Image (cartoon, rainbow, N blue to C red; front, side, top):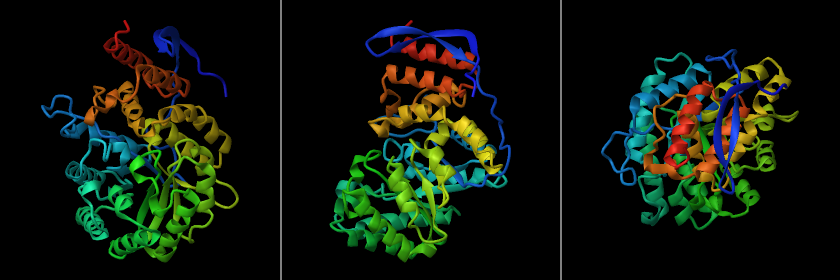
Length: 394
């Protein structure tokens, strides 16, 4: 694929060591604003929230959402043919977004989805109204899960069963995970997506499924899924390890989907092999939505080369955005939304816009440009200069 055409537009960006270098922007790729074709993969974007920058709430103490901008971006994703995985970690669940606000977000998204034909939406049910340190028993965890599942189902929502910090804290064996999951799965109204979020995304989830070794943990997860296959639509695995995802994918019961959560290797996993493929539930799809939509449309037409040509330049961006400490990837997601004009500010709930350095964000800008994802280079350049100025770079 030819390199994007360079524009007569440049900006000084910082690099490691405290130096500034001139960077010339490229012309953006021309991605469709609406889905170009029906997909042959299910594709959810775990989606960010837009903070209300004018609220009087102290961002370290409370959560204020710009509801109009937040829902408008979900409509953008639906028009691109992507589903919305609501109130997940990309929305800063557990990092600024509490359960009360999450439920309001879910309610508003469900209402908005009814106006969009074919809109795909599933929402995170967890235990975060129960502080992990306050959990003393499995029954505490079960009650917390039951409350959230019931609240979402009462709104007509589908469930993504999120991993629980409280369960990770109180569980003493694999049997404890069996007890909790089988209790909840036995009650759900329709099949759910189980979310296995690795400790690289949330250190409080280390040792999930009763084992620090991911392959031993996988055995427990597979056993839970197999015993309850009729209640499981799929499993989202976020371990950033292609081999582990494929190994688990090949052992899933028939009819249970693998939703890749691997923001490092998504192209190969979605394309699949002779033994199967992964569907997608990815945080990076929020930031690269137009490219993801165009690539999935190409794959549906069996245009594998085009699929990879579109996604290949997005992978360096994703790997940079999700680099350790991985929980801070949300800062890059929201920065991309701001640079592309989907919101008017770069403010996040919890004050998380400060979680990445200006050198990190400058490299994000370069990589987004290389992927053709800065849809209005003039706007993106102007906003990046504003961010640089805040950091004392004129």
